[in-house]
Image 1 (spheres, rainbow, N blue to C red):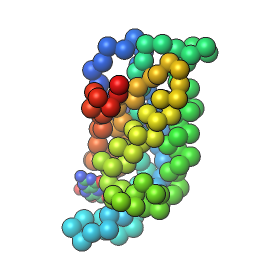
Image 2: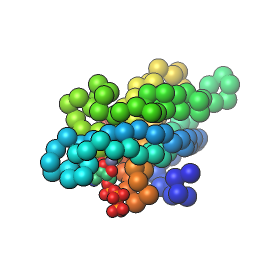
Image 3: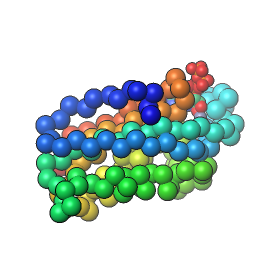
Length: 141
Ligand SMILES: Nc1nc2c(c(=O)[nH]1)N=C([C@H](O)[C@H](O)COP(=O)(O)OP(=O)(O)OP(=O)(O)O)CN2
Ligand SMILES: [Zn+2]
């Protein structure tokens, strides 16, 4: 997975969890400036999510791996990204997809008593193109 590329994120949390997944989705960037990308096309997105925290839940989980996959995969797999409400105001670029994934995951983590933090989201759109998204420190308070 991830073509063996795992970017490191600096932190001092006791635990770091990583979840890899991939999903198939179509998108287009509705602007002439996007060249060929203005036309609908598909990708197999490879996604890596990094979560940190100091405290585990009663099961000994920082967060359930399955919960992380469900938030992203159930939402986007075999869908057209442009159809999702979060891409009505912004285009579904790799950068925006990474940002939206971070936002959805952190929103769910905020409901947990042990308060894990989503430290990094990597989205690989093609074999040669990927984005790393990291929140600002104030967004993790
Ligand atoms: N900053 C961004 N640039 C581009 C994005 C993007 O999301 N953010 N997206 C695209 C297209 O959607 C395209 O699918 C991916 O582009 P690209 O990596 O250029 O695709 P190729 O497979 O043709 O890359 P090569 O390395 O030239 O084979 C475009 N730009
Ligand atoms: Zn594309």
